Length: 174
Image (cartoon, rainbow, N blue to C red; front, side):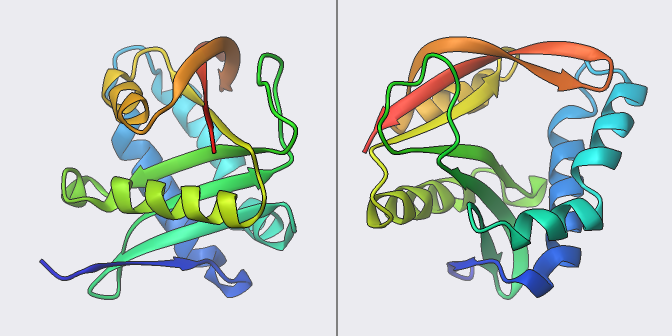
């Protein structure tokens, strides 16, 4: 397999990121019996429109990292500087808001390479804690984050359309 390269997204990556975000979120969650199609579609229309992604790319506190394999987008991560949530103990927090890889690359190291790049970015930027919310019904992701040093510190609600879902809040000191 070709090597995985990680780069920071540029403003003109909005179309690429929109497609990547939409596809990877749909692949990850659409088939789960707890997610109604109408809730998925409602959330995705709001979160993954090209206009929304362009706004996030223009925000100085939001950073997207893109993983490529042979110049093909394989996954991405979204970091949000200075974001926090009740229960997160940090002076200079950074949120790992998203980390997804294409289905065809699951188990190929894309997620771990993105995670390592997120840690590197956060440390170089002077953050002391990285935190995230992970769906209570996503044990694969929970195990991945635990292997990367995250620990559960609370819960919060993630609104998927009309469905208030529970996410575990996890953090890791940097």
